[in-house]
Image 1 (cartoon, rainbow, N blue to C red):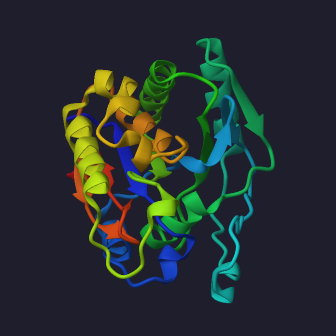
Image 2 (image 1 turned 180 degrees about the vertical axis):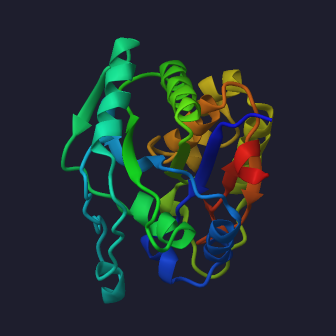
Image 3 (image 1 turned 60 degrees about the vertical axis):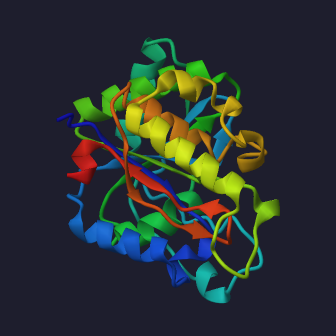
Length: 261
């Protein structure tokens, strides 16, 4: 069994922490069962950059990067500490291996990080390093970067978390029921199959997957998932939870053997 700790979470709406939903219950239960890592790096869909960036704030702020939600959500704070020295070491190691990596000394925790993790670890006891999704490169390069992140995490006994959405077309939401349309279910099922087989070639060509352009009109919410699969280097990620929010927003969660055990 690999010791590589990789967890993929679909984070859903910013108010997931206040919403009665199966995904909320799943995260709270997972936090009770999951062995707490010494630290975690979190690749968030809401931290998009042309290349790879690491947050190195010692006490990262809680960023309420959304509008129009209940006042209670804006009063929430997630005081997880950062790991500036480790973030610096990681950046230096990646740069030495030809992966251009920058550091952001003031990067806050966006809602792609604190919203799901406030359910997973409500006491904010796990130190976090925010990680960007590298937008300015192709899928093959993104997978190579992810493999390096996975090796580094395993060598240092860290968890690698991706936070995005298995399907993310906000224009196709509906609010009457949570039953997905066929296109959302087909892409969701494709993701499960590819992750279970560690199929890196399929990930490289993910835009050719069934209904990919409709499931992800823009790529930033898919890339944390792609990078979690890449971090496993062909080994499987198993489904831990399946549900949908707003009809077509998949709340899929996946984990490596070390996480799912």
